[in-house]
Length: 187
Image 1 (cartoon, helix red, strand yellow):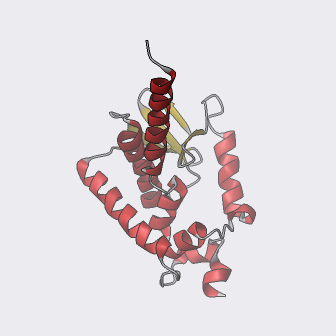
Image 2 (cartoon, one colour):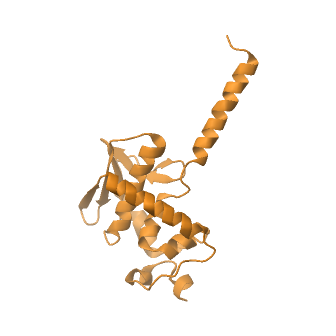
């Protein structure tokens, strides 16, 4: 039998452990990881509270496709306000995207989800799949040691970018034309 002093000590130890565990979580969301691979300046704006996507037509279209596609699947599993999984089925994490034009960013975002689940939640042996319903295509993604190292390198670089007082300089890209941040970057 435990005394009340032992119980409160154990409870406070558990609370401290939970808080420490939460403090060890990476500060980045899946969206931010995707932005890093699209445009480092977009990542900086977003991380500093400038969120221009709400009025963007492409973002609205992506949300519509996301809502209308795969309606029978359980959607939007939010984990720690860091990653949002569209659905999980048979050991596969699914991510729905409008087009494959930013395939590297989509792939790295999904790899980050797998990395996060492995390293912060202890869930291993998952695979990822990007679903492009409008294209009727899918792409499989697997977290290999090489991909883990790539994610870790990106997280370190992302930390440097968001801690900077100034947005990084970037070159004009074709995607700038349809980016919701175009006015901020190029006036």
